[in-house]
Amino acid sequence: MDWDGVECFVHGAEDRAPPNQKYKPFGKIYGGGETGHGGGVAMPPSTSVLELLECPVCTNSMHPPIHQCLNGHTLCSTCKGKVNNRCPTCKQELGDIRCLALERVSESLEHCKFYSLGCPELLPYFTKLKHESQCSFRSYNCPYAGSECAVVGDIPLLVSHLKDDHKVDMHGGCTFNHRYVKSNPREVENATWMLTVFHCFGQYFCLHFEAFQLGAAPVYMAFLRFMGEEDEAKNYCYSLEVGANGWKMIWEGPPRSIRDSHRKVRDSHDGLIIQRNMALFFSGGDLNELKLRITGRIWKQLNPESMGLFAQPL
Image (cartoon, rainbow, N blue to C red; front, side, top):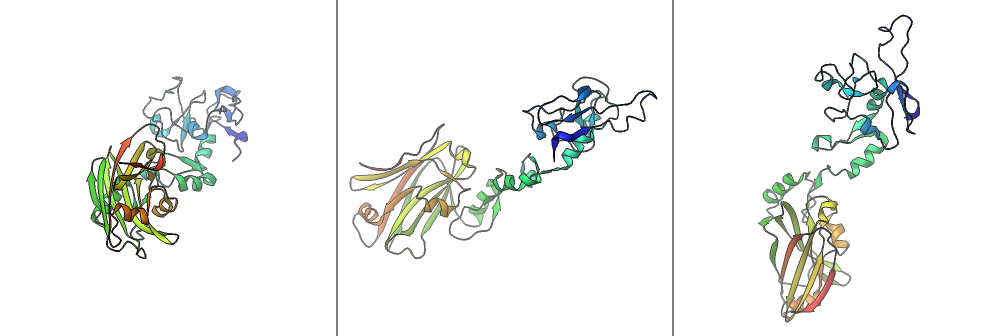
C-alpha cells in the first residue's frame, strides 16, 4: 500500500455541518513526515505504522471502528466508551468521527500466527511469512536426539514431554558429573547418545553426549544446548572437563540454543570432542572398554566468550 496518498476523512461529518460550511479532510498519513491539515493524522519519519495504530489508552492495536477527535487524535472503539466522550490526548469532544484511513491500514495488516502464544506483531502479508519463520514466540522442536520426535511446543511442554515420554533424567543445580561406559569403543554404527536435562537459574539446559564417526575413527562429543532463544543463551556459559593419568581436556563456551538442531551443533563441532586414542588414554589404556567421566558446570555472565578447547596438566 502507498502511504503517501491515504486521506483521513470525517465519517458522516457533512450531514452535521452548517449549510455554508464544508468539512475538509483531517489529514494524510505521510511517509516523509509532513503535517496533515487541521491537525490530521501524520506520520513523522520515526513513527512506524504499528505505532500509529496503537491506542493511546490501552496501547493495543486498533481495529475498525477507529475513532478520532477534531484534532486528529485517535483511539479504539473499546476505549471510546471509557473516556466520557473526551479525547484522552487533547480533551476535545470526540463525537462520532471515524478515521477511515487508519481503518484501511489496519485491515491490510495481519497478526502473527503466534499471536495466541504472546507475539504482539501486526504485519503486512509480504513480511508476515518471513517474520513467522523467525518469530521468538514460535514453538520449539523436541530436543531429544535419539529419534525423529515430531513433538513441538513451548519450553514447559517440552520439559514435561522429555520427562514423561522420553524418560530423560532431570537434575537441579549447575554442576554435573557424567559417567560414560562403552564396552566396545570401536562401534558407532548405532549412534550412542545420552541426554540429561539440568534446571538452574530458572532455565533448562540439555546436556548431550554421543559417539559418532568422524573420518576413519569414532569420536566422542559432549555439548550443552539452552532451552530458549539464542539471545538468551548468550547470557550463560558452561565448561566440560574430562581427564585421567595426570592430564585433562577442558571445553568452555556459551551453550547453543535448541533452535539449532542437535545435528547442526554436533556437525559444527561446538563442544568437547574427544578423539578415540585420547578417550582410551583417559580410560586407563584399556582397549576393550571405554570409561569416561565428564564433569562440568553452568554459570551466568554478561558477556560470555567461547574459550575453545585446551589441555593442561592436572
